[in-house]
Amino acid sequence: MWRWLDLDAINPIDTQTIYDAVATARGRNIIGDTLIFCYPRSPLVSLGYHQQIEKELDIQFCRDNEIPFVRRILGGGAVYLDRGQLFYQLIVGPESPLLPKNVTEAFRFFLQAPVWAYQSLGIDAHYRPVNDIQVAGRKISGNGAATTADGVFVLTGNIILSFDYEKMVKVLKVPSEKFRDKAYKTLREYLSTASAELGREVTIDEAKRVLKKGFERLLGEELQPGTLAPEEQKLMTELRVSYLSDEWLYMPELRHPDIAARTLKIAEGVSLIENAHKAAGGLIRTTVKIENDRVADVLISGDFSLFPREKIVVIEQALVGCPLKKEDALWRITSVYSDHSLESPGVLPEDFVSALFPLKTT
Image (cartoon, rainbow, N blue to C red; front, side, top):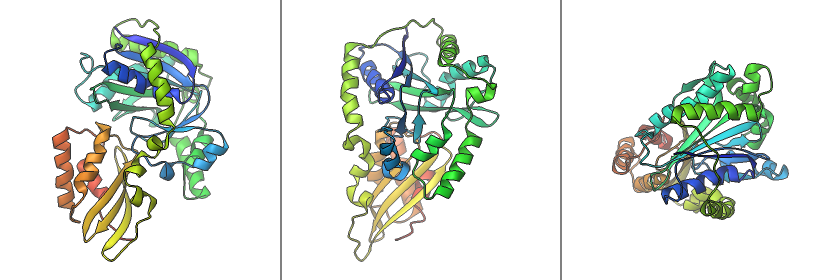
């Protein structure tokens, strides 16, 4: 039996901590499978698990405009969240008969509900692999997922009622204002909303009604409102603190403080390079210390998704000592994928290699 938490407007930070807390509680068998509806009472920027804040966000703009930013447990890119978006969050135990065996199929299955919700509003939406919902080639819902150490599957997404395109491009770090203008135009062309598609305002209540019906059709049962357990409330209180800590916000950089801060004393035979590669499943960034023609250290970041997400550290460690040869790097990364049963929708081991080579010294 599914528990449904219909929470309306909540603390913006809690739109991210709640599914983390509920997933932890689900892994401890404190609660059952859960579906959450919520939206932030004020704006928030949510950063993907593997992203570096300094490379993705205009931190000063966020601070000047009192827009908090947090790192989420899901992959993907930085997104601007506000009351124009209704969020659905599924937390599913590993023993659930509804849970597909891989992440790609989980997206395909669970996103049937929001697709149906859009269609019932009169919007010709459809699922686009790996994790988008589109209408006429334009994105109208973004989705992300994670799997916890206990095997609990988490999927989050949104029904986009309206969107502040200008604010979205302002919170992002860009090389120039000309680039920001281009990003704004691209975003307007690529991202649509329910209200824009229908030529009228779509309310939160209207969206909740059709989304609830969509999930009831998918899950095969009528959803009844529930409440957070005391253990979940305690976990959320703890997570609010940790989500705003430097240890969490700057996690990728703190794994490799020297190369992230570029404070290395470059000696003969030592160089530091940065590279990036756009895979189908997201952007991969690398910062690599090269010493005596071998990888001495590497930081991997970006808006891709990896399952389990923590295994990015294992990939980084596997590359240390690697000669500057693509075939060597590919063998090491492929071995990690095999040994740890990794999944990365839209991203192959070859994509990580492409993010490392060509290695251009600085």
